[in-house]
Amino acid sequence: MLKVKHFIEQSWLLIVASFIFGLLVAVTYASWKPRIDQNEKDKLNNLMRFMITDANSFEIAVRDAEINTGKGKILKTNIYKALYTDGRTLGYAFVAVGSGFADKIKLVIATDIHCEKVFGFKVLASNETPGFGSKITEDFYTNQFKGAPATELIVSKTGDPEIIDDKIITISGATVSSEAVVKIFNTFIAQIKQKLEEQGLI
Image (tube, rainbow, N blue to C red):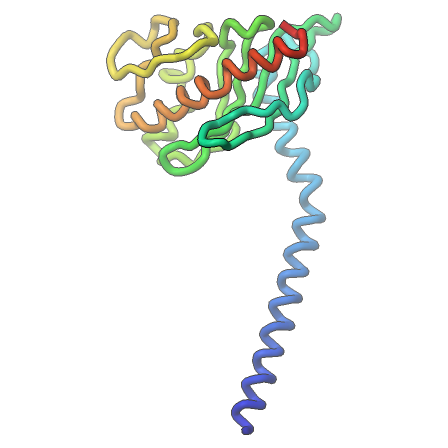
C-alpha cells in the first residue's frame, strides 16, 4: 500500500513538472515568435531584392494563392510584385516548397513581369546533405536558371550548363536534390502564372 501511495505521489510530481515545462516552452515560443516571423520576412525580402536588384519595395500581389502540389495536397503561397521607385512592376516572386533528398526544400523564385522568364532562385530553407545536395546553392547550378524560360524545365545529366535554355544539368553526386529543385519549379511556375492571369496582372 505504501508503494502504491509513493508511486502516485511521484506520478503527480512528474505530471506537474511536465505541465510547468510545457507552459514555459509555450510562453518562450510566444515571446520569440514575433522576432522569428520578422527575421523570416527580412530574409525573404533580402533574397527577393538580390534577384530583382532594381526593386525599391515588394508588395503582395496575390495572397494565399493555392498551388496543387500533387496527390490532392494544396499549398498556399503569397505572390509578391517587385516595384520600382515610380511604382512600376519589375517582376514577381514567390516561395515554393517541395521534397528534397533529406527534407523539404523551400525556394524563393523570381520571374519577369510576364512570368515568361526566370530571374533566378534562392534557397530559403534546406537540410540537404552538406557537400552534395547543399550544392543546389552554388553558382554552377543556380546560374542555369537565370534567364531560363518559365516553362516546363528538363533535367539532364549531360550538357553545357553555360547554355541557358529549358535544360538543367544535374549536380554530380546530388542528382536527387537537382531533380527536386526542377520539380518544384515545374509544380509552381505554371500555376503561379495562371493565378496572375486570373487577377489580370499579366
